[in-house]
Image 1: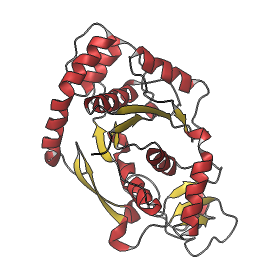
Image 2 (image 1 turned 90 degrees about the vertical axis):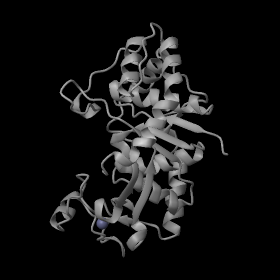
Image 3 (image 1 turned 180 degrees about the vertical axis):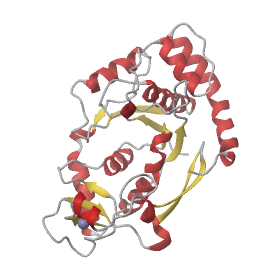
Length: 297
Ligand SMILES: [Zn+2]
């Protein structure tokens, strides 16, 4: 059996909020329960959304919650050389291509909006861009190979026809920023991540990441997508909806544990972590047993 390596990979647009603390705690618990290591990676490839200082704040807040990474933290903004190399490899193999389409041109071309709300790229530049390249895209495999069947330990078997949901997706953007999908796949492999435990909002990215892993000849990790935190009205909380920042400490950890279906009543951070860890294996088993019962996405 290979070694368990898990990670928490926040984007530094703000400090921790309720949802990201749940992802941090869930990934930490799963790594500890497997006697593996837990890494933290700052996903700051999106330079327009990254806020200076938010990375340091997140790391301090994790420490206040007793969540310490086992290895030095990685910053994606320092990893460009590796992403460049991956893109070059794909270009050389004909698995990536430059695209000159602007957003407006895609609208005019009648590109349909996929189920995830993204415009499905119609493949306009597959045989060569018609102008200055604005982005680089992955060339999806033909037919059934673009339809990914993957497994989540909580959601069960998922099927995503990426050619119909997003089409040839962007690897590097017009503004020079690396796409989230490429950075995640290259980094997970470079860090030897065996298990990806993250929020359910990222489940829709998984098929794209698996296609990229296949194109680059990289292994596919195990996936566990955690339940999303909801407010009193049952609405999903996310950063983009202005989720409130958490005040790190035992109280915030108890609430994060509750969102994961764990009952932790301890007064100190250490007690809460110990209680949550003791219940984690059973929680995980319940999820995998109920996985078939959850509706397909
Ligand atoms: Zn194009």
